[in-house]
Amino acid sequence: MASGAAWVPGGELHEEVDAVGSFAAGDGGRGVGAGNRGAGNFNRKIWAMESPTSTHDVLGAPVESASFVGFPAAKFAAPVASAALAASAPEPQVIARGRENERWQLGLGFTYVKFRSPAIDASLEGVNSSVTYFTNEWFGVEGNITAAFGRKIFVDDQTRYAGITGGPRIVMHQQRWEPWAHALIGIAHVNPQLAGVGKNGVAIQVGGGADYPAWPQISLRVEGDWVLTRLYSQSQNNFQLVTGVVFRF
Image 1 (tube, rainbow, N blue to C red):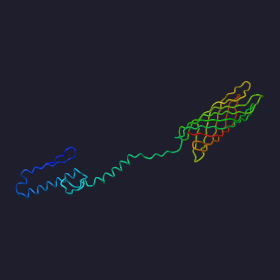
Image 2: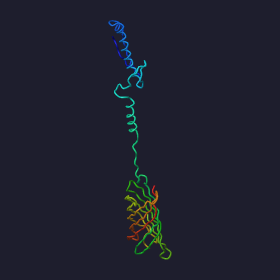
Image 3: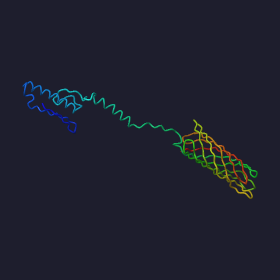
Image 4: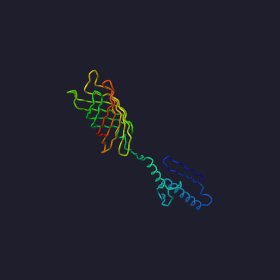
């Protein structure tokens, strides 16, 4: 008997059997019948491999499931699909509440300034505003403006104080309160003007405070600063208090 197997692109396996004279000699009809039965069993195996989901071959006889590699295809597909979904699913992200979403702060409040010098000793009240941009969770860059007004002196001159400063701010995050400190430098303007000296000079503002988050995106603030000014050809040691609100965005 001459036989040969051929694999055709597309997945079908064909068996060619050349039975010329192989079963005709020797055993007669019995040989031919046995050869036909063997060919039929082999064809059933071939059709079973071509149709993994079928339980019968083309002749109607039962055949084994597509388990020629040792296990059913359905049991193999389920773990593979689950593993593929698990690999493609994105990992859950944990977003922490902090400066990543609140980089800016705008502070507005009332201020009290005590300006002390040999020529002018005044208590002034006014407004204070600050803008801070945070580069990370604890460090920010601040700009600060103060405008305060006091009583009249020298007949018709009203005492006025204005300060424009800027510098770093450091924040410490606690469970409720957020204490912070800053060190600012800029200019100060004081009225009235004295004879022979200017009204403008250098201002150094060092201090700190604490913010209390009372509402979403809004905090209450208390602040105290030591303010060193250089006016009237001499230095003045002053202090400043601020109470107000802070908007975070």
